[in-house]
Image 1 (cartoon, one colour):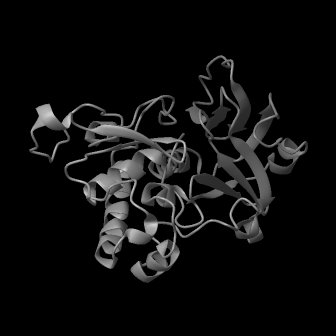
Image 2: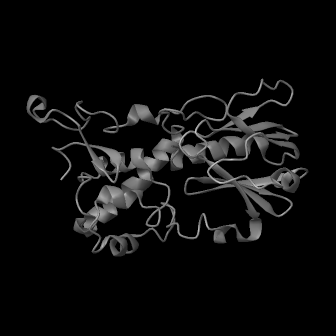
Image 3: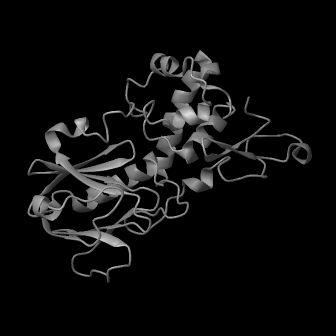
Length: 280
């Protein structure tokens, strides 16, 4: 599923293409996603002008000039497509929602239908049930060493699972958790409470570094993820351990014949990749 870097990339692309566009027509072909799309969704947003876009965790928000905000979450396979208003393509099988605007068409496509499209008042979107339990964004000042130390103290779960806990810090997904822990030289199966103060500072620094580099590379195109224009991201070319089981990691000089390279374990039901030599 798209993680923070992918959602940020989508948000920036849609904002560049459709900011200040007027929504002229809305077609809801399939309202049954993870949550049902409101029955009056089209009525509430038709005629409104798109003012700004925002990202919160793995959600994209589209703020309109009529006081409404559209919330998008892409689930496992959801994606946004942007098409020219003058040369629209034929609708595809899983095109569930189509917004025709003065600057082009925005299409939500989702084969598995695990994503969602919700609507709320712009003034209180932060109080929406989707957001009230989320932890800070990785770049928020509140995501500090003291904060993270308090969250990890006495926590028996593994540090990998803790990084995926959206109530601790929002936006980190499976791909980037493995990459962050590799660069921090921390084994993913260590308990969260065992992480030292020095390691916590390193984790925060590398979380921001890895996610920023991924954004600059347009995200990681694995499985279904592509940009709204159909292009792919390139950060997967910089992955050190994710999905590289049995390969030598780029920073290790171990006896490869003995170590067997990058290993895979399952933590919290998610595949996890790490170097048994470098990560302690």
